[in-house]
Length: 488
Image 1: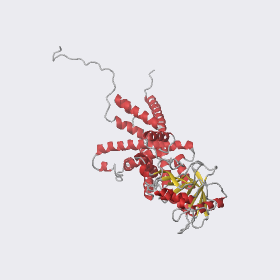
Image 2: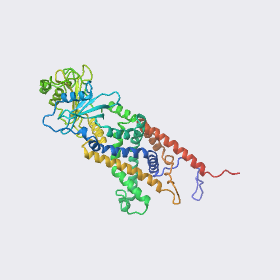
Image 3: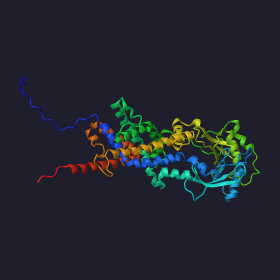
Image 4: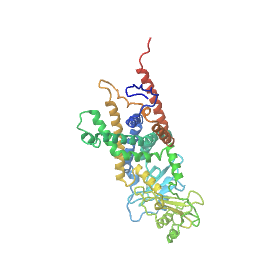
């Protein structure tokens, strides 16, 4: 036993992992936020600007295509069958229309035909004045939204840079990383707020600090304040945008199907007695009491547009915006669907047996599951059609705010350059090595989360791997450049 006067030699310590300082998380998030901003920023900028333009495009459409969209206001418009016949006569088309959208008050009826020369989801739209029967427009119509050529072009720019399917990689990259850059930005903002807590510095995290003379700090203040106020909106844009993507979208669809979150659809059964959800009330047969035999050229697919629409109205289809589709083949039913996405509940649909005038199947929004309803509202809100102009303005603010945040991020990078730098010099990247300083359980957790998210969002995973490789290469080059010269 050593005495109090003995000197105890310290035992040599074994090599061990250095203790993790509290700031390793912030260091990791800061570097990740930086890399996303530098490399994904251009994609986010294009998506934001084109998205803002798309949000405001309905008003542009009404001005540019006013002649095709404006019809005669009359108390007794022509029947749908007569309008379809007028469209067939004016265009020389004898085929049954793919779908018909009855006119809103003051608008025109869209009679849409299949055209093999057009792309997927595109139709030849013939616009008929319901008061006169005159064809006032002949345009390509796209998708459920019914967008016309200008809005379709803006949509394609936003979705694929007008490059088709290969171009969709750009928008999926932007959507995949937007939520990550928003979350990391919010965490970094919260950490800075915790350090400043009160006073003018804290206020500058919520309201842009225009008083400071330091250009970098002023730019950072605009970047942070805008990001924190719009952060939840960025998360929404990312989540809903991924539903349209190619690779992540397929995973989202599979997940929704597995969890039973899919949107109900009509089965178009012809026999009302065998159809799920078949009508059993007294309104089911009302559509059969209308005589439309005198209409020429419109008795298509064994039925009448007017009779089918009357049956659907009696069955509760009451939205202003509707789409009537003839039976695509023998043994199937006509469908009438509400397509007014500006009101969140008007998406009901019915299948109608044109021969008997009975409803053979129906889908009601009230019967949707919670997730199906949220998906319906989310898609409509992302497109800027939920609640009309209000949704458009909110989307435009989000998109332009995102664009401004990206620009301020690049400006911050440039303004952090060395004081004596000239030309296009930029500031150094945040310090690397955060994971080397983190405890092993944290490294394992980060790895598992990164791999899991990367598998579900393949383009995020691929680009994250590219970031890591680039970071390792840059680190090796820096170490080699800073290494002391070899001795003689």
